[in-house]
Length: 218
Length: 218
DNA sequence: CCTACCGATCGGTAGG
DNA sequence: CCTACCGATCGGTAGG
Image (cartoon, rainbow over all chains, first blue to last red; front, top):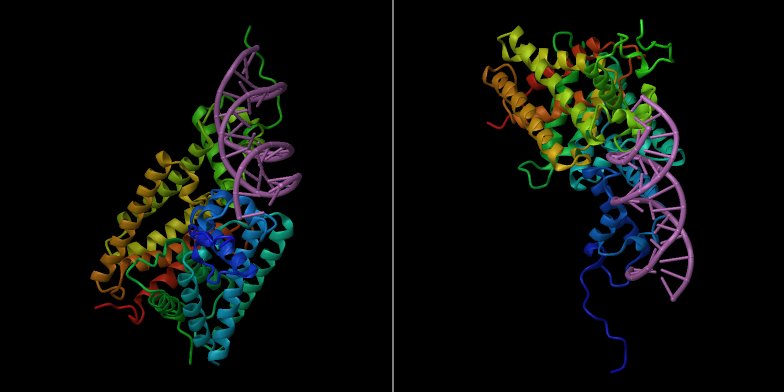
């Protein structure tokens, strides 16, 4: 028996890689996810690459096989969060024609994502200024894009008379502040599921926007 | 007349110190304010003491006359924000007996403070993990304290039947997320005053909580 | 309150 | 994917 023995080693990549011959992309994603979690919890600058590497069961230099800089990791993490938001909007549009229902679905969907990804989305709280211009600029663009899309959704609901007329910009700032904050306090150990939080928050938002005395005429 | 001449110099301390014989405390406060603004906008670790010093028209070592460490500055800034929150609650309790009205007043008062302090309050977004335990612990205690006080206010409004029954914890997380986010986007150049934002947000919140008890948990 | 400077951390690289 | 190490930044101090 003269072949190189495959010795039992402590789990590398935190068991996030299923197959023995792990693919590059899978590893890269596990890296970004792990980093996003850490960045979200402790902040970008309070998290060293060494800590991330350790959580994945490798050494720091190994990370550089999958990523060029620490900034790139943050950029990637934020991009994933924005993609999820876009996905949630798309799903909401596909599922209903009614502006109000679309808004509701978006909120529920997005909160579901935010809570299911174990805190990865808290990286949205990390200031863009932690990134150099070449990364910060596209991120800012995506922030504007998301903002615009949501304002349009709100405006549509206003036009349909489903919610009280007002400044869509302020409305979006209101409920996105509440929603994005979830990633900062949510823990899967808690008594509430993401779905429950989503339904409750959507209720708060829609009731709040529907307006009190000066309700829209139907 | 053998006293040292007071020569005309370029404005130091960014003109935040009115009197010629500037007091220690005034300077210290100007320092914390300026730092809070910077920390809130760019983040704690993205802001060097050198930048803060420059904004105040002095050199970095000069700051150490007023403060022991950079951490102490962040701690102080957060403390000021929490004090303001406590103040807003106190004012709300003094101004009304009605639980719902107290909640409304708190929201309006607090948003007014947040928007009047030119972004100093955005430091609340800075993770506590940027601080060593001796500072982080008391901050966490104040977070819990504020949370408890607000939950009690919400519970009182529920007991009075002014808002739908539900989980006060979730309710507070909802509207405080929205409110604390304001410091991150508000700018005095905008078309809206802090008062207007406060009234609008308070309306959203109260209507939202009053609404159909989707989240009512019997 | 300033000039000069130290010390630690940490992102990133060399070389295997 | 690892060991060893470099370089820059930056908080903090000495000494005046």
